Amino acid sequence: MPAKFVPSFLCIILICSIVDTIALGINRGRGVSKSCKNEIHRNKKLPIPLECPKLSVPHPPSPPLPLITEILEFADQRLAVVYPIVQKFKSLITSDPLGITKTWVGSDLCSYKGFFCDNPPDNKSALAVASIDFNGFQLSAPTLDGFLDQLPDLALFHANSNFFQGIISPNIAKLPYLYELDISNNLFSGPFPSAVLGMNGLTFLDIRFNFFSGSVPPQLFTQPLDALFLNDNNFMTRLPDKLGSTHILYLTLADNKFTGPLPGGIFEAFSSLTEVILLNNQLTGCLPYEIGLLKEAIVFDAGNNQLTGPLPLSLACLEKVEQLSFDGNRLFGMVPELVCEMENLVNLSLANNYFTMVGPLCRILIEKGVLDVRNNCIPDLPFQRSVVECANFFAHSKLCPDMWSYTYVPFSCSN
Image 1 (tube, one colour):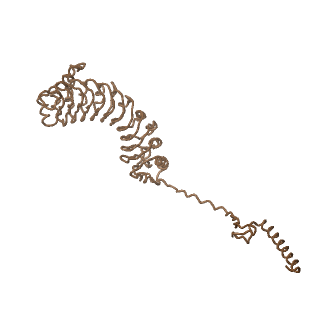
Image 2: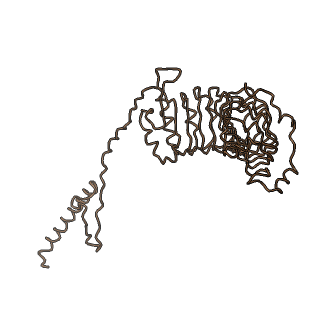
Image 3: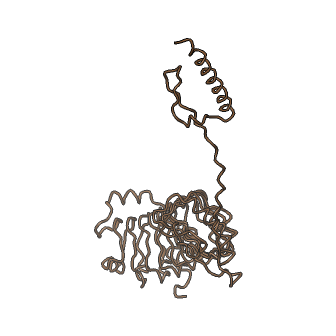
């Protein structure tokens, strides 16, 4: 390089250094150089391209979204009180194959499927949830606690054929208007729901086809009930020997484990019964002559137990009976002709016992298909037990106490 250009070149380098120094100071104060603009910057000393840092400028915070709350208007304050109870129960439903709970939306509880409103007894101008009918809805829930017992104006609760579980809360006794309770065909368990014993207004109780177990309180049979259905559970108890008066019309205890004899006092207490179902239990002993006190009975079924002895003549006093069954017991002796004379008999089932004789009137009923005596020990009739089987039974059969009572009718059947 010519000597005269050296000072000029040095001046240029010096000026560039001053400019770079000033620019560096400015960049340190302002951040990224304007000349960078987020582009790839190549360092002349390094062969690797360096990316300029991207400076994120914070945006001002967005204003919070306004809360949108639906304002529900209820036709009555009583509905407003019940609304959260229903919605809480809805959240407990684990299965709803028919889409029932899809209708449980909004403030009009009276339009919810399964809910029915009416005027409560204490205020005829008010509107409240008065009855619930979940029959056949196939709903599943782990409990009814916090729902059934929290509906203060409820008069009827029907929930047949669902999959409800748990026990029945004792708080249902606080429901002042409840007079029909049907929780049959579910998955309830535990002891008998004794809370119903304090419900003097209850007239209909149906807890059949569940998994209740243990004993049944004797005072249940003195409740002011019209209908009592306990069948198809696991109750293991004896029928009470003595009861006060009761006006139960329908008594169904079938398919449990009731034990012991049929006490005569129970028939005296239940003289107004029109339907008695004792089928498939473990009842033993002889039939008391007080069975003839059931003058209003239309159906009496004590089949598939372990009852023994002869049929008492007092059965002839059941003048209204249409269905009478002692099928599958250990009864023996002669089928009373007085029983075969009953005018309203449609079916008399005495099959699978050990009867040995039938008279002419009973044979007429056999021909008509009214009387069934198959699998007994009647020598001249078809479809009977073998001689060996009958002989073995009579070798170990026991006589009943007070045998005189089986031929005695202590009251007039015409009264």
